Amino acid sequence: MSYIVLDTEKFTTLPHRIKTKKHRKLETGGRLLITKDTSLELIPENSHLTHAVWFRQNVWELNLPKDYNKSVKKLAKRLDAIAYM
Image (cartoon, helix red, strand yellow):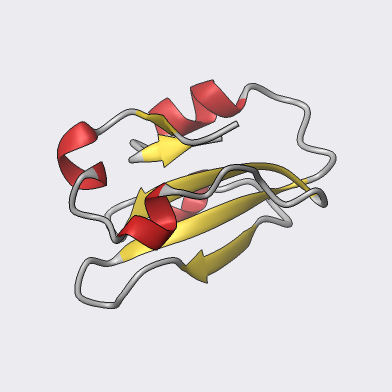
C-alpha cells in the first residue's frame, strides 16, 4: 500500500525517498504527511510526529497509534493532509 495523495501539487515537491514508501510501520494505525499549518489540537493522542523531509518544506510525518480505530481517510481530510496510508 503506497500513499493515497490528497494534494498533488505539494506531493510532487517531496523528495523521491518519501514518495516511494510502500507500507506503514506495523506498530502504527496509519501514516499521514501533514504541513506546518496543521492544528496540533486535531492530532489524536499517542500519535508520533516526526520530521519527514528537509526543514525547508516543513512537511511532517504523523504516525497514528496502533489502536486508532477511526477512519484514517476522514482524519487526513480534517487535518488537510498531503497524503495518507
